[in-house]
Amino acid sequence: MKCIKCEKPALHESDFCAACEDKELSGIGGFLYLPAINIIFAIFSSLFNSYKTMTILNSGYDFPGELRILIGFEFICFTIIF
Image 1 (cartoon, one colour):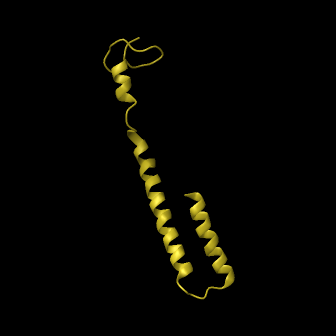
Image 2 (cartoon, one colour; image 1 turned 180 degrees about the vertical axis):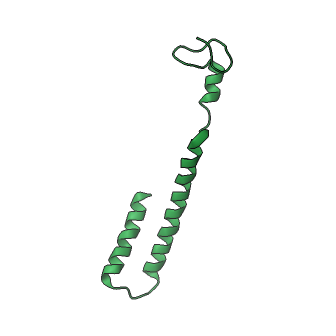
Image 3 (cartoon, rainbow, N blue to C red; image 1 turned 60 degrees about the vertical axis):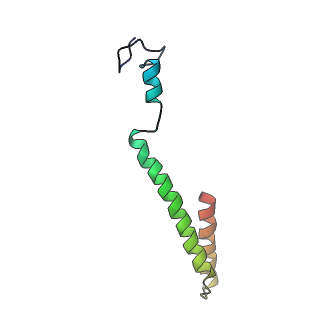
């Protein structure tokens, strides 16, 4: 069997030779950049939302008890998720 890129003899149970397989397996390439960007965006968004939630909790506004519990629960969920 030959390599599908350079026509050299391919490795056993592979479509590539040793040199082409090393090139093929390096880097994330392709559509995997989109999920990587999304993960980074989600982390920064979660940190920002946690900061804003803590700012609201500590701001001194007189929230009703139920709303304060809900905002505290939101902050706990943010920290558990990330």
